[in-house]
Image 1 (cartoon, rainbow, N blue to C red):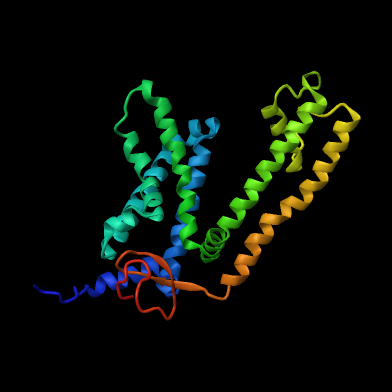
Image 2 (cartoon, rainbow, N blue to C red; image 1 turned 120 degrees about the horizontal axis):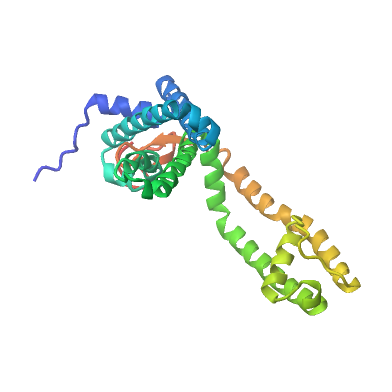
Length: 272
């Protein structure tokens, strides 16, 4: 049984460096061009949703759409080619986003007929999610995502505490104001408490009694102090990881976020 490691073709290594490594000059230019293409394609989809523009420039916008679909299709295929485990990349978050960026255009060809126009419109709107492709080309976005993951437990506890608070406050307001003042049920009162605590203040429901207005004022003041809590949690986590920038990408599973001095992938153990 031959256990010798597989030898990768040099062109695959070069292609991987261009597509996945943003530190090389070629990689930076690749990212810049791809970001410009993503933004342009999203703008084209948005313009196509304006009836006056679509009527006048519909053919041109459709041509632009197909151009970007082909570009993203080629990019998707190249990504699968330059990694050792293409299925692993295809089922990853960014792999699914890349696929979703091209699938709607091709699927719309398979659904002819005026009775399916609504479905085609939904598929066209799905193309707007190409903006998610931008995330993988922004180092700061990856840093923020790591901070969000690191603080997820604390934020979950915080959200649970807020949920408990609005249920209690909404129930109190339901008892104080009652149906005659618009607080027809506890869920509707909880909705009011959420709107008030987050300082949104739609004004569709408002307390009429003196006690209710005092309680509303307390909730409003409390809202200002609560809003700052998740910001502080994420900020602390950001400060912990800001000094540990990671840019290496695995050629085997395409996972990113390895330290610059890492030798093996922390996800699949392949040599970097």
